[in-house]
Image (cartoon, rainbow, N blue to C red; front, side, top):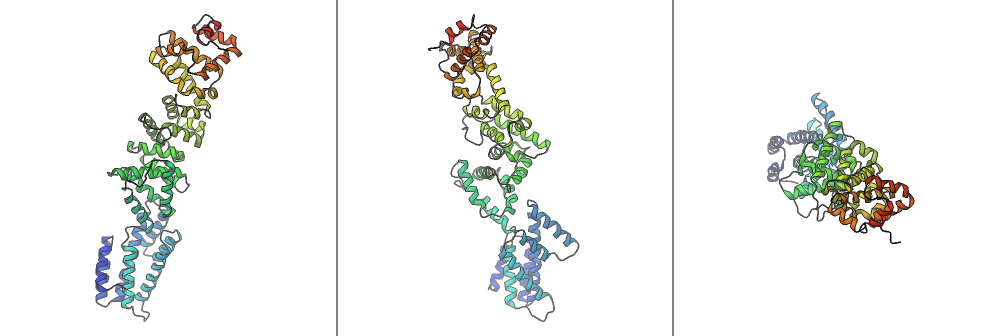
Length: 452
């Protein structure tokens, strides 16, 4: 049991300065032998403080908000609210069983002290109530569940919090950290993480962003709505959150779902700007890469929904990364985007602008292996004819591809030859209309000599 000097020292542990006066007066009553008054004052400070913390938690927790509303109503009507508040906090698991037990013990002591029952409060009871009130409640900045979050946020300044950038390892660390937190604190956790995303300390900033992305990657129903509300909706108008929103959306596209029209406009603008600013050195396997984002969107929503809500974004990604093998794989399950992609390639292959035509000729070999699954023989032949047309116009890289008889792009070459064998009349017409050769026979002999 705490001695008199300890009781004085305990005052320094009280977080709320407004409660210090109550407890200082309680100590004074104890010294004067007014043990009942010490208990009653401690009790008043305890529940006033608990109510304040409940109202604070209500800003980020829907369950706490409901309880807080009723408590405020009872307080304003001068009704007894203490028992109701404790029961509700316990039921919602916003306080622990041990805390609820302590509150009940304090309540019993207070009732004995406050009513003329003939039972006198002892010094031991007064010291017990005084100590428990400060140690278990007044010394805590918020309700217990939020204190764990506060401690977590402080640890984000540690450089080795996330030792790697691997998303699976990040997820594992995040899951481990969540194990000690109750679901009721998730809104508060995410709000604090969002604030930390712009912390002056670089480690805190970096780790907060990774933590949010890890939370998104978990794709839990208990987390997604809060990320959607407190990160995406709340910060969609801020370019400071551009990258973390992109990465979180790549990890879990559902955080982009269910927003009102103004927010969706902001989201689209934010993501499109992020795509434009993506560095060429970013690996496609990273969540910050636009191809990863597009793949996640298609998996979550399907192509029709993506082209309804994110058409410009999707087309921008397809255009920017049209010669990426990773993008080509995505197009296998996205027929409309594939048509856009193929149309772009055909225009580029036969462009009268040298740089544009050369871009196709210089990059098509990067995706040649996938062409057999993506395009039809007629498409391949039209691309080959377009390259020859651009070569005739003077595009040097196109000329190199043509002079090598397209051997550097074997899939494209084989498909083109296949088309001439299956539909020679149509192939001959394409050659003549493009004016790249007198007829199909000469074209084949000159540019696609078949070794067989």
